[in-house]
Each structure stands twice: as C-alpha cells, then as structure tokens.
Amino acid sequence: MNTLQTLQQRLGYQFQNMQLLIEALTHKSHKQPYNNERLEFLGDAVLDLVVGEYLYKRFPKFDEGDLSKMRASLVNEDGFTLLANHLHLGEHIFLSNAEENNRGRTKSSLLANAFEAVMGAIYLESGLESVRNITVELLELIHQDISLDSLFKDYKTSLQELTQAHYGITPDYQLIASHGPDHQKEFEIAAIIDGKRYASAMGKSKKHAQQEAAKIALDILSKELR
Image (cartoon, rainbow, N blue to C red; front, side, top):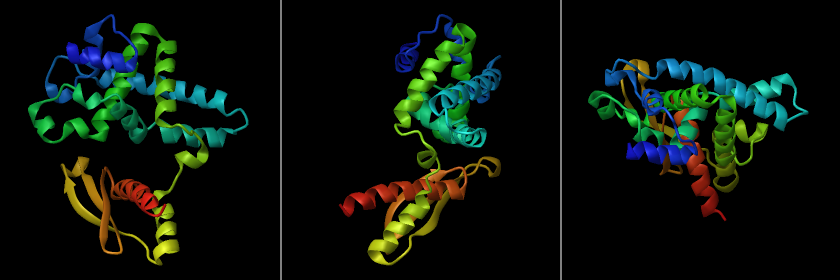
C-alpha cells in the first residue's frame, strides 16, 4: 500500500476505495477475478470529453477540424503513455511474471490503458471535476506549449533540415532490434548522422521509433551546434 500512497501523492488524489485503484492497476495477465479493462473503457470516454472541453475553452478561435486534430494528438496511446510515465505508473501495475519479463511495465499499450483506467476509477469515485483537474494539470506539465505546431512536430524533417544545413548530409535510420510477439511488436531504431550513432529509441511502429530517435538526436545535435 505504501507504493500506492506514492502514486496517489503524484496524482494529487486520495482514493477512498483502495480496491478501485487496485482494480485500475490490474492487468488481465495478473489472473484476478477483476482487471482494468472496464475502467479503461470508461476512462477513455471521460478523457475524450475532458480534453475536448479543455481545448474548446483554451482555443476559442479554432474550428472543429483543428480542435479534432489536437484532441486526436493528445487522446491516444502515445499521449497517455507520456502522462503515465510522468506518474511512474509502470511501477505500480499488477502484472503476471511472464508479462513483466516481457517488459510489460514499459509497454505503451499497458501504460496508456492503466492511465485511462485510473482516470475512470477517479471518475467513478469523485466525478468529472476531479478527472478534469488532474488531467489538465498533467497536460500543462507535459506539454508546456500546447499548439498545432508543437503537437504536430515532424522531428525527422527538422533533423534532416539541420543536418543538411550544417553538414550537407541527411540522417540514416537503422533497425537495431525488434521485441515482442507479432501482434505487439516494438522496434528499436537508431538515428545515424555521418556514420555516428546519435540516438536510439523504441516504438510500436518503425515510423514512431524513427520519430523518437530523431527527436533525441535533434536535441543532442542542437546542443552541439550552439
């Protein structure tokens, strides 16, 4: 229970019904009479509403198309994984030994689902306002500049522009390894610039892993060129 207390402190929310939190953190592989899939379903719907309302109020001049694109970029597996990692949620998920050995605590799908489930549990216990307060605070901590440009940044293009301008070359991306079963494959991609490996990253698709590697390499290279 002490570790769950730490999680609640990070959330800024104290559960009255601890079993509800435990259920929200229980993956189906843990083989209990309950798991977090129903709470995940509920949390997904609640977060869709909360984030939609937040964007509607924050960007009064944006049309439906722009608001939908921004919400889609935040309300997805990658977006929720960022929030889950900020909370160190992976430390608290109840998994089977097999799933843990298969790097379950770092899987985007498990982290995102657990985050949705926790928000669903908070909604059931305390209502929409509690979920809204926690979610908005997390969003503004993680995304300090929420805008169309920041949410749709193409790191591969930015890195290519930088390397062409300074070195006259373009980055290469190499597949280092792949992990997991075919239906849950994760890929590790390295960003190579002028023969030097600048960064590597994991992703649930090669495209996503390339973007993450490019993001890290872009940060490193930008600092080198200052």
